[in-house]
Every structure is written in structure tokens, then in C-alpha cells.
Figure 1 (cartoon, rainbow, N blue to C red):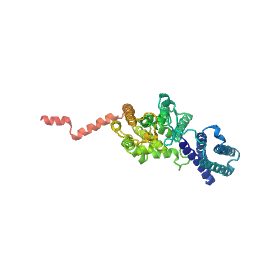
Figure 2: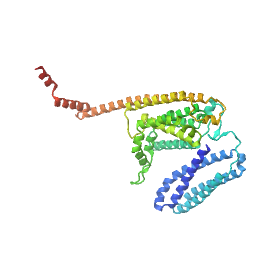
Figure 3: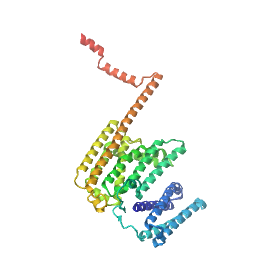
Figure 4: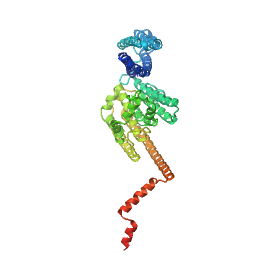
Length: 466
């Protein structure tokens, strides 16, 4: 968790410090526009800095008894200056006014530089020694005890970076719903529930009990993999986050400015998006990564590092979201594939996944390259049996969501046909009201014209009888 927290902490303070420097260097005309845009970003950065700083400091100090150590004193000093910077910024914006905004920026830069210097000293200093000696360096957490139902349900070891991304996603989604509500527009509660369930599944698979045991046992790793790649993406996709974003993102403030919404639309309709959202491309990314990961040395290498765990989890999630987005997604896509083509893609996905699972179950070699044996978990030492169980569980968990997606695709197909039938009927009724031919009449006229061009059937029959 500490590594992820440090990444978020550094990224947030870099954005804040860099934004203040950019404002200071801007001309007064550009500064007014930029200041209004930077204020919400600065608020997010301050929140992230405060939260990650407090949690990371507590992890390193480990107990309040160590607060009097040299490291603890530096933490208190940095926290005090950080709070002083916030208070000064709030006071300056209220009292100094727009004319003294440059003076305010100079004060913030000086104090922020002081905070950064103290952060460097904290990074070089040695925190109080940890009392736990059984920390597994490869995974960054203590070796968990043998799995039980209660431990699987209630264990929680958050990955700071993944947790920050989830919090950001939830905050943006809630913000979008609130914007629609203030505008008087309604957002379907079912979509919000679906998105919440998807986020919950991700958090459990990465940070919850499942995520904890996924780092020390292949069977739990495969369950986590399937949750991230098949179950959670369904909730995220049905939550329609792209639709929500397009309805709430700000447009450009000037006629020449594209704005955030404009950039989102440009990305959605770009050539790259058209290629990546093609069902065949989504299928290749989803299925090929299984063989590339588990039948090469890549799995052992990624499992040995924190960034490897993060990369695998993120890849599983994004590849699953991409596949279900193009198959059952309700958001706008660069291209809409025919329903029959989507069904074929799902059948191919089921077949490839079954082949992968059987190959993994039949293998007599460990695909982890000795990783699980190296961390030496004290329970369940039969690593090959663990691998075979993981393969069988992964087979079942991978097939069921795809079958559900297949059923959903059939239902979407039926509803689309019903909508088309109603549309044709409305057009026909409208055409009759104005005395115009409807689509069916036009089609019959077209057939009649072809018939007359090729010769009348009655005339042809008479000539044949003579």
C-alpha cells in the first residue's frame, strides 16, 4: 500500500506545485481563465496530499509511541507547514483580492518549496523499525494465515494506487450524477447501482480478502483475475460512464476552445478508437493476453514486483471492459457491429477460454516459475494442485459471465427489432395521414418497376400458352 500512496502523493503535489508555478509565469489575461480552471484541480490535489500523507506517515511510524522519534518530528513539522500553506492560501484569496494575486502566488511557492524540502528529508530518513519481521518483500504484505471464509470476507490490504483510482472514479461518477440532478435531468438508478457493484467487485478483487490471498496462491489469483476481467466489467459497462461524461463534461469557454467534452468526443471518434473497439480487436486483446501471461515467463516476472501486480490487475480490468463495452455496452461507440457478429464473437471467446483452461489444467509444469514456492506459504504446499484448481475455477467463472453476455445480446437484438418495427409503423401511419406512400408501398412500387422492366408475368404466360 505504501508504494501506491507515495505515487499518488508525489503526483498530487507535483500537479499542485506545477500549477502554481504556471500561474505565476502567465500573463494577467491568461491567468484569470487558468485560475478558475486550476482551483478545482488544486482542491483535488490538496485532498489527495492530505489523505495519502497521513496514511503513509501512520504506516511508517506504526504507533503513536514513535511520534517522538526524529522521523515523527519531521512528519509533524511537514504537516504543520502544509496546514499553514492551506490557511494562507484561503486567507489570501479572501483578503488580498485579485490585484495582489501575484504576491499570494509567491508566498505559496515559498511555503510549498519548504514542504518539498522536508519531504526530501523524510524520504532520506529512517522510520522507526517495524515490529513485524515476517513481511514478504515480494508482495509488500505479511503472509496471511490459512484462508477461511471470514478472512476472505473481511481481510483488507489496500493497494494505495488502485484505491486512489477507484476513489477518483466514484467521485467523478457521483459528481456527474449531481450535475444532472441540479440541471433537472434524471439518471437511471439502475445504472448507478450497476456502476457501484462493479467498483465494489474491483475493490474486493484487488484490496479485499480475495486480493490478499491472490498474491500467495494461484487459485485465488485466478478467481481475482476472473472477477476483474469478467464480472466487474459488466457492472462498469452497464453503468454507462461515457454517456454520463458526455452529458456533464464542460465545453470550451471560448469559441475556439474545444473543451474537455470536445476532446472526449474527438478521442471517441478517432481512428484509434475505431480500431480498438472493433469486436475482433477486443477479442484478441482479451484472449491473447491469457496465453502471453500464463504460458511465458511474464507471469513470474510480474508477480515478483508491486508494479507487476498493479499492471496485471489494470490490464485484466481494461481488457474485460473493452470486450463487454463492444458487446453489450450502452455507451456510444465509434461503430455498431451487427448483433449476429457480436454473438459469433462471444461463441469464439467461450471456445478460446475453454481451450486455455483445459491446457492449463493438463499442464504438469508450474506456470509461476517457482514464485509461490519462493514466498513459502505455510499452508497448502501442493502448488500443482493449486494451479489445477485455479484453472478449473477460472474456466467456470469465465464461461458464466460470457453466457450472461450472450443472453443480454439476444435480448438487445429483440428489443432493437421491436424498436425498428415501431418506427416503421409510425412512419407508415404518418405517411398515410399525408396521403404519401409508406416504406412498404415504396418497396412494392420498386418490385413492380423491376417486374415491368423484365416483362409482365401475365404477358409472358400468354406468350407461353400460344
